[in-house]
Image (cartoon, rainbow, N blue to C red; front, side, top):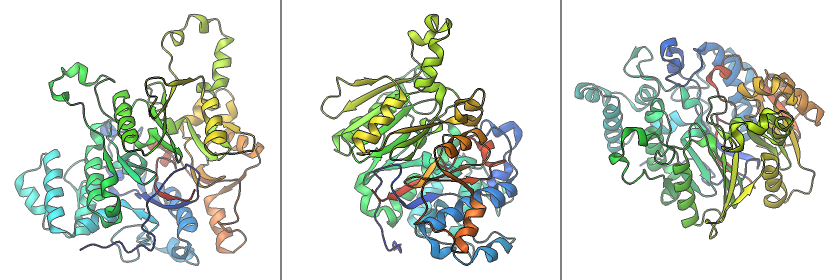
Length: 484
């Protein structure tokens, strides 16, 4: 029987900026290096990536920073040794020198652990082979691999890292999209694109079968499909009012009683409605705000247009905020444009027991200000930092490379990409220290700085390859435990 070896099995998230204590990630695997140009967009990448650069110069620093804050004993005094290991065994689950933290957890490790159970292995192998249309002989062959190798195959799509069996899962590095912890409940998401179907099945098995989640099994929420979905004509199945898709980048737990759900290119109105019904029925939250954003690849999820930096500080895209509204009002076209009859951005707030009379909120700044002051009790002035310093054309350029997609390690300390120069300039003007992950790790190693004492800091990651994948540090994490 598998057991949870961690010293703190609690799973609880009730804010976006409380000190991060535990999260799920997935380091880039060999499957990313097998994405071909003709399939890149089908697999939701803008371009093919150079895997070794993405790992060694970019994502590996993300992991080192996470460990420095959440499990420093795994990294302190070991940087030189880790960097000299050409095999990258420190980062690879199942390898001899894997960091094996109970606080920074690669989902591949959890997957391998549940595959040690013969019953789980048989069920999951059958499920994967079914959706991937594998032959029975392939299914039998897969059952002969050990748990670590089978986990790699299910994720990378390749035998022994080479022979391709089925498509890779390049988007698994964006862990937030497969599940969200809402207080002490876990919401299983429903990806919008077929390329992510295998991810959702792997996640479902991990969350239902791994002992780390055993104590919340009754608190795992699955979103039901439209009851008669199979009877709908094909053209109606794609309608926002019938399809049931939701991804984690569109869900933010901003306070113990308040959840945000975005309706976007990836999350449907129907799914948002179903989640609201379930959460209100279970009394998980008391208030849900639905933020409808334009269905454009540029935006994808709400966490690509805003995230929280500190209780009273937010980063957001000006063209979709109040500043954008003011700019459009100066243009004659505003008076005749489609936004007057079909608003691209709409914000409705629903309170439990009063669902029939939602409150419409005019703009993002009003919503975010009320979260800071009313929900979180901040007495400091609410501040907004705009993508690209809200200068044309940098706002949109830098939003495309995830200037608004930041992960708060604790209140006021965030991690994001180094390429968004104008956004970093805006942070600097607001009093934030800008420091690269590499330099910060050296400061920690030499005891000149410590994670506990760090305040108002933007930690930068190199991002030439990661940014091609269209996701930032917020997307690359699934927090499962935060302090209030």
